[in-house]
Image 1: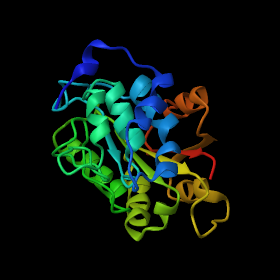
Image 2: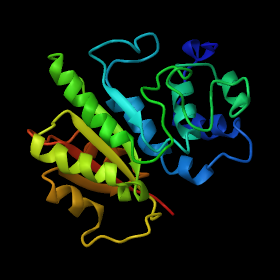
Image 3: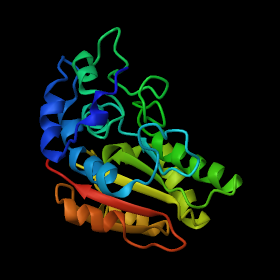
Image 4: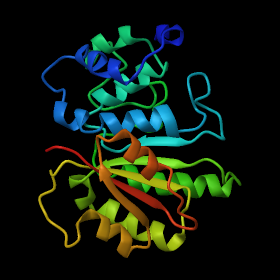
Length: 232
Protein backbone atom coordinates (compact mmCIF):
# COMPACT_ATOMS: atom_id res chain seq x y z
CA UNK A 1 0.00 0.00 0.00
CA UNK A 2 1.40 3.39 -0.97
CA UNK A 3 1.80 6.33 1.37
CA UNK A 4 1.83 9.24 -1.07
CA UNK A 5 -0.18 11.45 1.30
CA UNK A 6 2.86 11.83 3.55
CA UNK A 7 4.06 14.77 1.43
CA UNK A 8 0.68 16.37 0.73
CA UNK A 9 -1.38 18.45 3.13
CA UNK A 10 -5.10 17.70 3.26
CA UNK A 11 -7.90 19.57 4.96
CA UNK A 12 -11.57 19.06 5.63
CA UNK A 13 -12.42 20.55 2.24
CA UNK A 14 -10.67 17.60 0.55
CA UNK A 15 -12.76 14.91 2.21
CA UNK A 16 -15.75 14.90 -0.12
CA UNK A 17 -13.44 14.60 -3.12
CA UNK A 18 -11.64 11.71 -1.45
CA UNK A 19 -14.97 10.02 -0.72
CA UNK A 20 -16.01 10.48 -4.36
CA UNK A 21 -13.08 8.28 -5.42
CA UNK A 22 -14.86 5.30 -3.82
CA UNK A 23 -17.65 3.89 -5.97
CA UNK A 24 -19.88 0.82 -6.11
CA UNK A 25 -23.31 -0.41 -5.12
CA UNK A 26 -22.57 -1.06 -1.44
CA UNK A 27 -21.22 2.30 -0.35
CA UNK A 28 -23.69 2.90 2.50
CA UNK A 29 -23.36 6.59 1.66
CA UNK A 30 -25.61 8.06 4.39
CA UNK A 31 -23.98 5.91 7.06
CA UNK A 32 -20.65 7.38 5.96
CA UNK A 33 -21.51 11.03 5.47
CA UNK A 34 -23.17 11.24 8.87
CA UNK A 35 -19.84 10.36 10.49
CA UNK A 36 -17.57 12.60 8.43
CA UNK A 37 -17.47 15.71 10.62
CA UNK A 38 -17.00 13.86 13.91
CA UNK A 39 -14.27 11.68 12.41
CA UNK A 40 -12.42 14.68 11.04
CA UNK A 41 -12.48 16.59 14.33
CA UNK A 42 -11.26 13.53 16.20
CA UNK A 43 -8.38 12.79 13.84
CA UNK A 44 -7.44 16.40 13.18
CA UNK A 45 -7.67 17.86 16.68
CA UNK A 46 -8.26 15.28 19.39
CA UNK A 47 -6.59 11.87 19.00
CA UNK A 48 -3.03 11.76 20.36
CA UNK A 49 -0.20 9.66 18.93
CA UNK A 50 -0.78 6.65 16.74
CA UNK A 51 -0.34 8.54 13.47
CA UNK A 52 1.28 7.05 10.38
CA UNK A 53 4.33 5.06 11.43
CA UNK A 54 3.21 4.98 15.09
CA UNK A 55 0.30 2.59 14.94
CA UNK A 56 1.94 0.30 17.51
CA UNK A 57 2.84 3.05 20.01
CA UNK A 58 1.51 1.80 23.38
CA UNK A 59 0.84 5.39 24.49
CA UNK A 60 -1.42 6.19 21.51
CA UNK A 61 -5.10 6.93 21.82
CA UNK A 62 -7.22 4.16 20.32
CA UNK A 63 -10.11 4.79 17.94
CA UNK A 64 -12.57 1.95 17.29
CA UNK A 65 -15.11 2.29 14.49
CA UNK A 66 -18.06 0.21 15.64
CA UNK A 67 -20.20 1.73 12.85
CA UNK A 68 -18.11 -0.23 10.38
CA UNK A 69 -20.79 -0.89 7.76
CA UNK A 70 -20.25 2.60 6.34
CA UNK A 71 -16.46 3.06 6.28
CA UNK A 72 -16.07 5.45 3.34
CA UNK A 73 -15.67 8.56 5.50
CA UNK A 74 -13.28 6.64 7.75
CA UNK A 75 -11.11 5.67 4.77
CA UNK A 76 -11.17 9.23 3.44
CA UNK A 77 -10.03 10.61 6.80
CA UNK A 78 -7.30 7.97 7.16
CA UNK A 79 -6.03 8.85 3.69
CA UNK A 80 -6.13 12.56 4.49
CA UNK A 81 -4.13 11.97 7.67
CA UNK A 82 -1.44 10.05 5.78
CA UNK A 83 -2.10 6.43 6.73
CA UNK A 84 -2.19 5.49 3.04
CA UNK A 85 -2.26 7.20 -0.34
CA UNK A 86 -5.43 8.47 -1.97
CA UNK A 87 -4.72 6.23 -4.95
CA UNK A 88 -5.84 3.29 -2.81
CA UNK A 89 -9.36 4.71 -2.45
CA UNK A 90 -10.40 4.00 -6.04
CA UNK A 91 -10.16 0.26 -5.42
CA UNK A 92 -12.70 0.39 -2.57
CA UNK A 93 -14.55 -2.90 -2.27
CA UNK A 94 -12.50 -4.58 -5.00
CA UNK A 95 -11.16 -8.09 -4.71
CA UNK A 96 -7.55 -6.94 -4.50
CA UNK A 97 -8.20 -3.84 -2.40
CA UNK A 98 -7.37 -3.61 1.32
CA UNK A 99 -10.41 -1.33 1.69
CA UNK A 100 -13.38 -3.62 2.14
CA UNK A 101 -17.01 -2.73 2.73
CA UNK A 102 -16.17 -3.39 6.37
CA UNK A 103 -12.71 -2.33 7.63
CA UNK A 104 -10.21 -5.09 8.37
CA UNK A 105 -7.58 -4.23 10.97
CA UNK A 106 -5.13 -6.63 9.33
CA UNK A 107 -5.32 -4.75 6.02
CA UNK A 108 -6.11 -1.10 6.79
CA UNK A 109 -3.28 0.94 8.35
CA UNK A 110 -4.56 2.73 11.45
CA UNK A 111 -7.65 0.52 11.97
CA UNK A 112 -7.72 -0.83 15.52
CA UNK A 113 -10.50 -3.40 14.98
CA UNK A 114 -12.32 -5.22 12.22
CA UNK A 115 -15.94 -4.08 12.38
CA UNK A 116 -19.28 -4.04 10.66
CA UNK A 117 -21.30 -6.45 12.79
CA UNK A 118 -23.12 -3.91 14.93
CA UNK A 119 -22.90 -3.97 18.69
CA UNK A 120 -19.27 -5.05 19.03
CA UNK A 121 -17.38 -1.76 19.25
CA UNK A 122 -18.43 -0.56 22.70
CA UNK A 123 -17.75 -3.91 24.40
CA UNK A 124 -14.37 -4.05 22.65
CA UNK A 125 -13.64 -0.51 23.83
CA UNK A 126 -14.45 -1.48 27.42
CA UNK A 127 -12.11 -4.44 27.12
CA UNK A 128 -9.42 -2.22 25.61
CA UNK A 129 -9.60 0.16 28.57
CA UNK A 130 -9.38 -2.73 31.02
CA UNK A 131 -6.42 -4.14 29.09
CA UNK A 132 -4.62 -0.79 29.19
CA UNK A 133 -5.25 -0.53 32.92
CA UNK A 134 -3.83 -4.01 33.45
CA UNK A 135 -0.63 -2.84 31.72
CA UNK A 136 -0.43 0.30 33.83
CA UNK A 137 -1.25 2.49 30.81
CA UNK A 138 -3.58 5.14 32.19
CA UNK A 139 -2.74 7.91 29.71
CA UNK A 140 -4.13 6.57 26.41
CA UNK A 141 -7.76 7.30 25.77
CA UNK A 142 -10.09 4.91 23.98
CA UNK A 143 -12.67 6.31 21.57
CA UNK A 144 -15.45 4.30 19.94
CA UNK A 145 -17.95 5.51 17.36
CA UNK A 146 -21.37 3.86 17.22
CA UNK A 147 -24.68 4.60 15.50
CA UNK A 148 -27.91 5.46 17.29
CA UNK A 149 -29.73 2.33 16.12
CA UNK A 150 -26.72 0.27 17.12
CA UNK A 151 -27.41 1.24 20.73
CA UNK A 152 -30.40 -1.14 20.62
CA UNK A 153 -27.94 -4.05 20.68
CA UNK A 154 -27.83 -5.92 23.99
CA UNK A 155 -24.04 -6.09 23.90
CA UNK A 156 -23.86 -2.29 23.86
CA UNK A 157 -26.41 -2.09 26.66
CA UNK A 158 -24.29 -4.35 28.85
CA UNK A 159 -21.06 -2.50 28.06
CA UNK A 160 -22.67 0.87 28.77
CA UNK A 161 -24.16 -0.40 32.05
CA UNK A 162 -20.77 -1.75 33.18
CA UNK A 163 -18.54 1.17 32.20
CA UNK A 164 -20.28 3.83 34.27
CA UNK A 165 -20.16 2.11 37.68
CA UNK A 166 -16.63 0.87 36.87
CA UNK A 167 -15.50 4.48 36.44
CA UNK A 168 -13.76 3.89 33.10
CA UNK A 169 -12.55 7.46 32.64
CA UNK A 170 -10.39 6.52 29.64
CA UNK A 171 -13.48 5.46 27.69
CA UNK A 172 -15.15 7.86 25.23
CA UNK A 173 -18.14 7.05 23.03
CA UNK A 174 -19.35 9.08 20.06
CA UNK A 175 -22.90 8.16 19.07
CA UNK A 176 -23.90 9.35 15.60
CA UNK A 177 -27.60 10.12 15.98
CA UNK A 178 -29.10 10.37 12.50
CA UNK A 179 -32.58 9.36 13.67
CA UNK A 180 -32.26 5.82 12.34
CA UNK A 181 -33.22 4.08 15.61
CA UNK A 182 -36.57 2.29 15.60
CA UNK A 183 -37.36 2.76 19.28
CA UNK A 184 -37.57 6.05 21.13
CA UNK A 185 -36.22 6.48 24.64
CA UNK A 186 -37.62 8.90 27.23
CA UNK A 187 -35.03 11.66 27.42
CA UNK A 188 -33.25 10.37 24.33
CA UNK A 189 -29.91 8.59 24.15
CA UNK A 190 -28.31 11.01 26.59
CA UNK A 191 -30.66 9.90 29.38
CA UNK A 192 -29.58 6.28 28.91
CA UNK A 193 -25.92 7.16 29.44
CA UNK A 194 -26.69 9.48 32.34
CA UNK A 195 -28.65 6.73 34.10
CA UNK A 196 -25.55 4.53 33.98
CA UNK A 197 -23.30 7.20 35.51
CA UNK A 198 -21.65 8.52 32.36
CA UNK A 199 -20.75 12.09 31.56
CA UNK A 200 -22.72 12.98 28.41
CA UNK A 201 -23.15 15.93 26.04
CA UNK A 202 -25.41 16.31 23.01
CA UNK A 203 -24.22 18.51 20.12
CA UNK A 204 -24.78 19.32 16.47
CA UNK A 205 -22.80 16.62 14.68
CA UNK A 206 -21.77 19.01 11.90
CA UNK A 207 -20.50 21.85 14.13
CA UNK A 208 -16.75 21.35 14.43
CA UNK A 209 -16.25 23.73 17.33
CA UNK A 210 -19.12 22.21 19.29
CA UNK A 211 -17.79 18.73 18.60
CA UNK A 212 -14.29 19.68 19.72
CA UNK A 213 -15.58 21.27 22.92
CA UNK A 214 -17.66 18.17 23.69
CA UNK A 215 -14.82 15.78 22.88
CA UNK A 216 -12.40 17.61 25.17
CA UNK A 217 -14.79 18.30 28.09
CA UNK A 218 -13.51 17.15 31.47
CA UNK A 219 -15.20 14.12 33.04
CA UNK A 220 -13.14 13.01 36.06
CA UNK A 221 -13.88 9.50 37.26
CA UNK A 222 -16.50 8.76 34.59
CA UNK A 223 -16.64 7.56 31.00
CA UNK A 224 -17.78 10.21 28.53
CA UNK A 225 -20.35 10.07 25.73
CA UNK A 226 -21.01 12.60 22.99
CA UNK A 227 -24.30 12.36 21.11
CA UNK A 228 -23.65 13.91 17.69
CA UNK A 229 -26.94 14.72 15.98
CA UNK A 230 -26.92 14.73 12.17
CA UNK A 231 -29.47 14.78 9.38
CA UNK A 232 -31.41 11.53 8.76
